[in-house]
Length: 357
Image 1 (cartoon, rainbow, N blue to C red):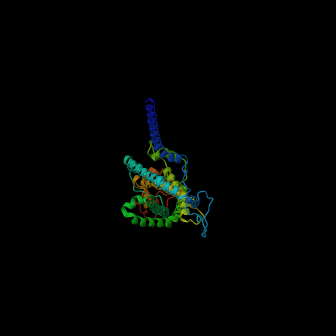
Image 2 (image 1 turned 180 degrees about the vertical axis):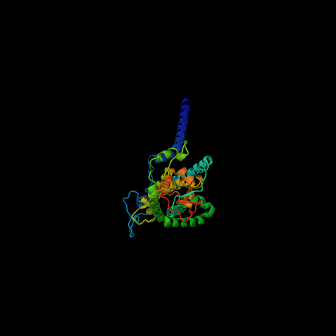
Image 3 (image 1 turned 90 degrees about the horizontal axis):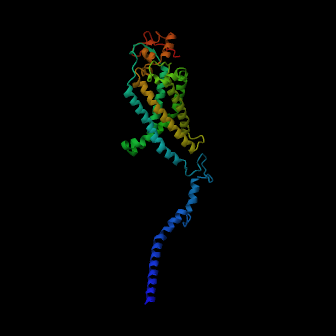
């Protein structure tokens, strides 16, 4: 009896251990392929015959070059992998940060207007007008303004139009609009270089920084502290805007020509970098121009007259550009270069241009 019981117990243990081992194997064996895959992702997998083919097609290591009868840069490239980093930067950094920059500048201008209001002429207008810009200077200014904003608006539509215009016009309408903007941008782009050169030649002589400009900046053009801030024909803020426009315009012109005339051996990598620099320069110049437009129109009373009629009130000149006003008066332009209120020419004929130092 004892031997029989011992045999049954042994048999029972064998069955139990066998079932436990089977259970463990059932749970563990399916996990083995995953563990092997973690150690070697390609273990046990047959080689993909297309892997080497597509590696060569993409030409990432530059060891394989295509063969074609067409001669030119990148003509032997089937898939240009520079496009994806450019696209990601454009959509993930350039578009949102550019919108934040423009929106931030507009918000600051609005806040400044709500707090400060319009800057009035100290003591009120006198009605005695002095020529500030002659016809040629105003023509150059407005020609540059027209070309710049044509390019700015068409460029902004190309950059942001899909987010704004597709919901309004639909894909087909936006496609036609974007195509027209691209053609206009490419066609009128070189004209901006002509306008920029004219602007530089006409106004550069009065836009070099001089003594007193730092004081003007430290006082925020008279917005900070007390007392009058002296300035010449152009104050420090206007000079900064001039050089931002000129230097930014040079970047826009050079990169624009690279993008517009892809016949000088520039490859896709150069084109992508040029596009990024072009867009960044454009967004910076557009954003700073908002401040220039505000101060020249609603921000400062009497300023817009200088670029419409060419004349400014004596009180405006004394208040904002006293050194320039003193130079005009010292040159004997006081009476002969004064125009009646309203910006017309002085009695007896057209006013001779005041020497503007």
